[in-house]
Length: 239
Image 1 (cartoon, rainbow, N blue to C red):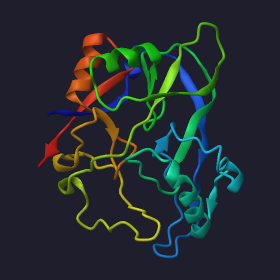
Image 2 (spheres, rainbow, N blue to C red; image 1 turned 135 degrees about the vertical axis):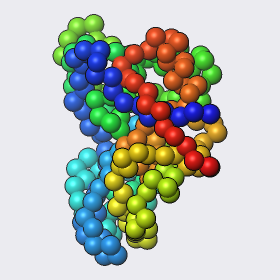
Image 3 (cartoon, helix red, strand yellow; image 1 turned 45 degrees about the vertical axis):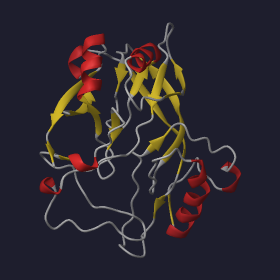
């Protein structure tokens, strides 16, 4: 099985842009007592998670950076509502994208590297192909135009990891308290094939969650169906 990294196709001249943010989020950590870092990572996002039932117990709509004890309290409020396989950390986001949009859109939209939107009709075509793990969710986005497309946000579970051969030899382990991994995108990323999911055709990585990865089944289906807006960059694997 071959794998590909998904990126926005800027060569097609689409002008569409979605200016939106998730409805809820966990706070960042303000100076972790273990690793001394202040940080957040918003790329682990779960549009299927509705925090309405716990929203009165914490200010999820204005997370900011907070002491780690408050982050841990809020994380435990969210944990029972997560989909199977979800991974949360400081800055994780939940619920629909809220904002506005305008312009001319392709079948896929990827204005931000860690968010992937798709037209409803394109998603239905891919689901009819039997591809696995494709779940789209409605947004609360207002289009500043007539005849606007129905765009859905794809929920991308974090599964799979980079192979150690492409990582710095002096990389420090994850912080045991806040979970921070001080890893930057490798110049030549390599996937650890032993960690890749057998039952998902579209996902993001656990240790590099801004990277959206797909299988060759997904790439070939998109090309065969003429679904545009994204390009597929081959990713090497190592066993």
